[in-house]
Image (cartoon, rainbow, N blue to C red; front, side, top):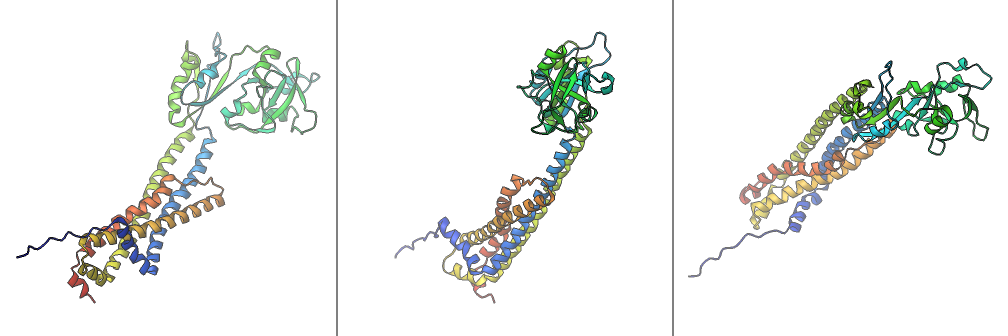
Length: 403
């Protein structure tokens, strides 16, 4: 009597599983297109609801940063006897604090400025003559309206840059290229005006100042080299820490005699705004993915019901339950992945276009761009689990007898 041989189930290669999964998409192109459209709309919504608020947030953060959220101002305590003198290298010492991104300084030279040597010195009362480091504008978010700012090449020469109000008071309204630059009388010397600054809301005292190079102030105005104000910009997350160590850094002997401004109120508003936007992004992304996942799951369940005869025929020809599960799960993932790619491209285009229309800096969070496709695949896997299991549980006789 011949012993019956045991037949091992056929194992499908990954390529075969992929072809089977794509079979339902190819044979039902309209349904597949509508299903992919559903997931693509969900992913595009995810990109849009994250990209547009992110661009708006970036624009708002830029406006808040312009209010000096990362800026500190340190100076000796006034009216001390003897006066507190910061070291010549105070700004360099501050720059060595790790979170500090830029540090600069100015110093009052106590010189007097006038429009000419024939005008009474009191005519320009209220205008300070300050020695300035060449990187001052970077520390106070300032900019030049006419001409140029002090550089290492002009630092030793009798040149000045006028603050916005100082220029108006001295009758220097603009600098015309090609024309002889105006001069002002500072101390006992003539200085050539090489630049006029724009208004600086973060440092209004500089608008009423005449800025002279550090070495030129030593040479022509008998400047002693001690800074009177140090401007510091630091990382916002470490601004309070920088404020705590700045007095001891600038004046180790008596740090209590150094006054440091407190962080701007705009910094607190900026941090609250960042937290609020992060929570908004997370909520909107979850809703968009949930809507897309429900759409794919619904499509796959309907597909199983419509294709019961196909499932029964495949089972009758030897397909195992694992083959059926793999087929429908692959189809669900492929459908979602296709919709994810289309939705990501569509969402990025809409978000960038709307941001450009509003004049905002376009910002597409990497998590949204790459997570759109990845999220679609994950949603497809989750949404395809139940339909694939349901399809695999159909017996050949029940499936073939279905109407």
